[in-house]
Image (cartoon, rainbow, N blue to C red; front, side):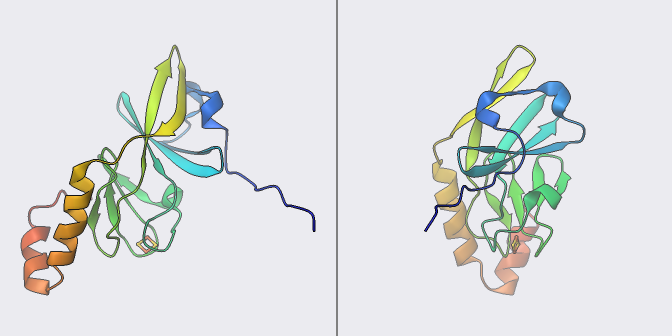
Amino acid sequence: MAKEKAEHNGPDLAQGIALSAFTSETLLGHVDDQDVLLVRFGPEIFAVDAHCSHYHGPLAEGLVVGESIRCPWHHACFDLRTGEATRAPALTPLAVWEVEHEGDRVFVRRRREQTKSWVRSALVNLATSSSSAEERQDSQRPRC
Ligand code: FES
């Protein structure tokens, strides 16, 4: 049986892209076999996994609000800086990728190490499964 070559979305971000490639606030690409979503926020560019940690919704079709992105399928929300899942139903953070600037090009070559805040976030989400606890936490979360 012939082995099928995986198809990738967008440019190979490890090879770099010109800043002028951004025609909107997001750009979908890949690093090796991982789809990675770049989000431009002012002078910063964030890079996160392109698929939601809930049921793999396409975050490239999501709504970007400030430094967060909302999944188009069930509206989980993620912090673009940390990858933290800040709104259910997602409980698991997104992987965050390192973005390197070289001249007018941007390169994405490797994932950032997960921070302890991701673990803390998952534990907080589990502990707040009751609606009253969720309402309390909701008032402290950044809106997305
Ligand atoms: S697939 Fe993203 S919230 Fe469900």
